[in-house]
Length: 261
Image (tube, rainbow, N blue to C red; front, side, top):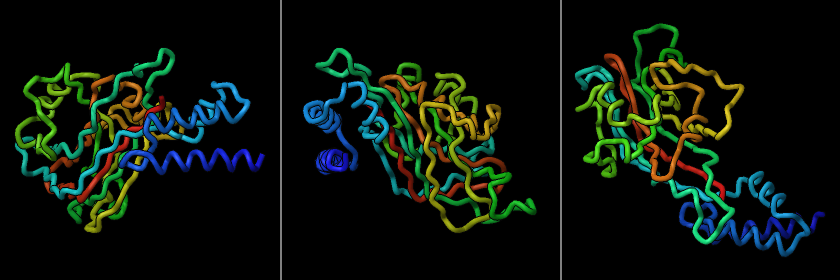
């Protein structure tokens, strides 16, 4: 058994070294490991697929940005800053060319953000906690077929809140409905940037605190976004702040979408 696991580990490592620039296996890498295991181990294909899923040996769509921005609530006419900071590549077609039984399936999404708030607060007892933080990140789905044809979000960070109200933004991204998911708040009253990493999977996290009515987006329900994605959809990472004095200082972020094949 030890030599078998060692051989499998070597195969996975070899294909990972040949993976695409983002450090994750390509679809060809996954197919090559699947063939290797079919030929080298007396295992049915269903078991091999379970092993690859357990190892999370999945291709990844990745985007990152290190541009610094300040999402300032008081600089908007309606007191709520909304910056589009990252936009993912479009979701690939479910069908895989040349195969009849294999389909792409989104498995998880990981957000990583480096940021802090304005560094002060007038609410005593909240310093250094996440309680009452109105400097945060949320995600929405951009479905081009449902949004206005003139909407172009591919040019980098864009201050949506300078032009559009919350109601306008809902009209820009009407589906799915609701289309706002809370990701992460900044620590209250901190001038030191901190990196937060948040992962959403396709299945509900029973331990998560769930608040579908949160003003910062549907809290604890990120699995909804993962399962709502359709071919052609993009995921938007929004930098947010709300109410006078609140700011979201963003120094960088990344977004990774993992899918099985």
